[in-house]
Image 1: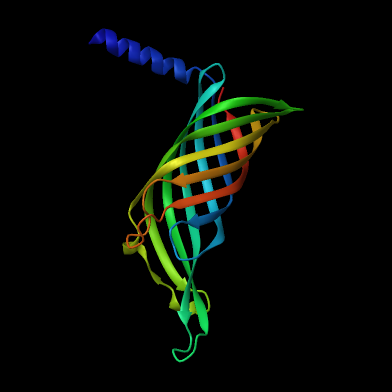
Image 2 (image 1 turned 60 degrees about the vertical axis):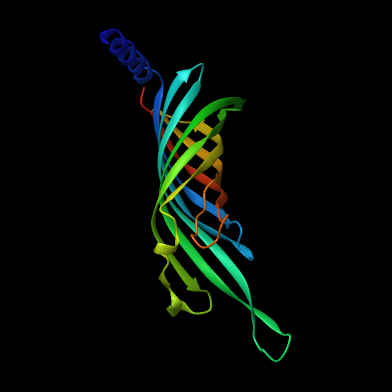
Length: 208
């Protein structure tokens, strides 16, 4: 037992002694909720905090903590006049707040001038904090939608990153991100899943 514990401790210390960094990024994303009658794409805000450590040959393990607002426009047709064939529509704005724990592998792609390029691919787990629903043409119609949204969400996530090193171990970071949910989001809409892509910018500090 002591032998296995020593091997585990040695492996963990090798990770800590490798190249480690912290980064914080902010940005926006365009989100789609699948399997609704009609869906409008709506922008929203994301904040990512990540810890990265080199595991082998410049391949990095990335652990993250993120706050996301996933916003959607649900456009549903309605009959304006029952005595005629005229149809209208109403637009619901659905906003869901999540805390997300992403984990991914970061692979080097090469360099461009003084910048370094990477590709991330991994999975995420998320917990729903709060959800609201509102008719777009009625600001007073906002109501709590939390109980209609499943607490847990998980799926795949990835990113294309460009890092520009500066002085004092800092780097500027820009990322094109994407995610694809694998579980239902809205309880009464089977197959409703989170999809999104966006742009993030921030800074990274190399701990070593």
